[in-house]
Length: 304
Image (cartoon, rainbow, N blue to C red; front, side, top):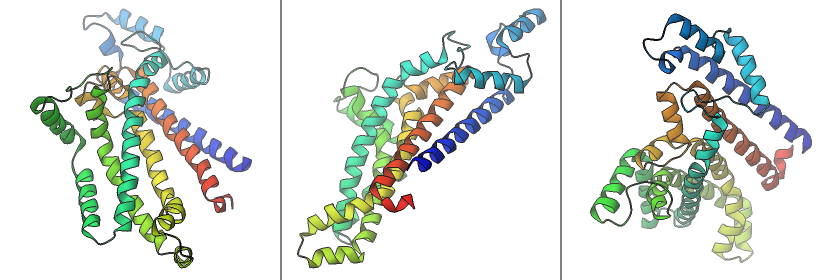
């Protein structure tokens, strides 16, 4: 177990190092941020003093080494636009994104698992057909279109829910529905396909021959093995959601990390963009490592 954990942690560190390098060097290919931070009539001496003060005059490799050294000590720099530590800005937006992401993931996982079980259990019936049509619609409809449609129906026509904002539970419903629709469909398809495959296994027929109820066979013996692929997909989804659901946060004026990333890109705020991307990568790596460890618990053969 410990060698497996050490191997996964080493792989995670390499991934984070690669992400930090790609983001750092790619951002500098987009241009010099001093052109945005200083007024157009700034003199050459003022530009040089600013570049010297910000460390932009050093070679890129030196800047990257300094960035890594500071990051290892918990310092990802200060925002060029807000003049505040970038970690403070990210952490301020994190609760809003986490609330939205966890709510969307929770309802999509629960609804997708139930729909997948029902579809597999009633395979090739009209119920199964309804489940498949629902999943097809959920994955075919773009998130921005669904969000606008929900606002049009539930906010503007029925006036049941607000169009956007943050702070009350009713403002969370429409963004969470919009964000979770695609993932619910993905979970449904995966659980249905996995469960159909598992229910055809020999040990399932043995369980039925022992006189167990169909629900017991499906829930206790089939679902445990069928849920492993869905667990993998949802772990990736959680990383993506926590990394920032850009479109949903913009449509519903949700003050999360996604909106912060968009603002940082528009402002060419390099330290803030690097912090947001590194934070998203860290979430991805952490969640996937935890899921890999959970695999070992669910399926001991993985230790081999």
